[in-house]
Length: 473
Image (tube, rainbow, N blue to C red; front, side):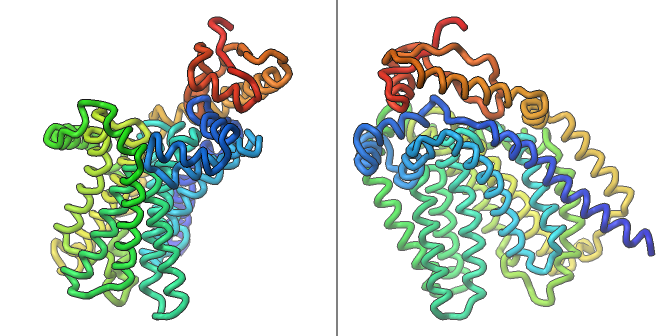
């Protein structure tokens, strides 16, 4: 009897431990975050010069069609002279990503225990942090996270809201939920080309599945299509978007962009599968799923999707994130884009496993309904996860920046720099290079060229002509 009680307790503690290991250092580092000289000051300098709405119009007509990303960037805490707000934003961002994963898992497995869902959330978050290409671009550089991490969070909440909406009776509450879901579509599409393609594929796939596979006209799904079409119209009719896409002659080559995208996706997938504990987590997931399926007396509709549709959608969502970089501007995807690709790679990987295993389980193939891992095997797999965690360069970096004081020193240096800039009467202020550069939250320093955008934008924020980096400390 004691053994039966101890085993679930150990699993629950292990599940919570996975989540804690992944997000605690990220939350701690958020208390040392600052706006980056790269772009963060420029948005607000434009606001100070031209006004709030005219500044957004300037970016929309002259640089990009990311209307919702423009709104968020021009609303960053610097607009009210609150540099410390970047700490709060990063803290909320980590919690928001974790919460969106938890909410989606809770909606998919409503009868599963809270501890089990925390375990899945922790496992995905840990895998994400172990191999993410750029932590600073995912959680601490606002110009990047509002166009990638924020819409990824909103996309997960959209999936959660859509699932919940179909469980509501046809009435005012369902209509209000549909309006909220439509807003999420509008917001996600307006953040970046990458998330636009993901959301369009999800909306089109949802409506197409209802219409073609289930042979049902779905007014709610059709409403999402209308919102998506309207949002895409606003995005692609931006004059700035056209100017940006014509900036590189290597872009607009469909065949070359397709081949480059497929090659890049293959390289990344091999790296993610074999250089992370993904396969170990997959074995544990396969062992858990039959017990979850046993809890449901009726079929789970979200796992009854034909396998071929799931595979095509999975590969499609990964491909369309990489393709715009090659086709639109003729270059490899930036680290922040690869972050997003990896995030959906993980989600799609475990969802695909779930669909395949449910098909085996439901058709009683290969004895899937009786698959079981003994505690000794689970213990070995847990040990492998711990070893992979200890040898992760990303985790060593975030824990080192936090616990060894690099982030705290960076925070103090920047506070001293701000005080120096504000107390200097000259209209051009020269600042010493930063000595502490914690790579998990540091992107770049000020620029040594007084005519550079970063120098002028920082200067404009502080009421100066320029803030320039000295050549030597």
